[in-house]
Length: 84
Image (cartoon, rainbow, N blue to C red; front, side):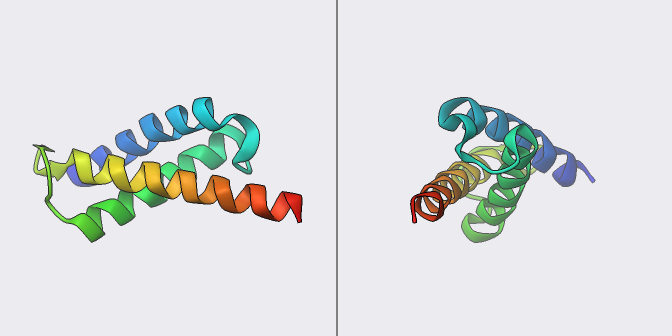
């Protein structure tokens, strides 16, 4: 349960940062940023595992890296589909 709560917290933080940095390029606005942050944090957690510092046995760094990368990839794909 703690892992899931940490995942949601990381998703909220990264989603907000992603929304602020990328502006309106992520579909769905702030809610879309939260979803991409959540998916990226989940992927980072499962791809990178327990890499980096942990909080309540949850790998914070791996989740942040995964969420940021996923948000950037989605932003780039969104720009490509809008310009086509």
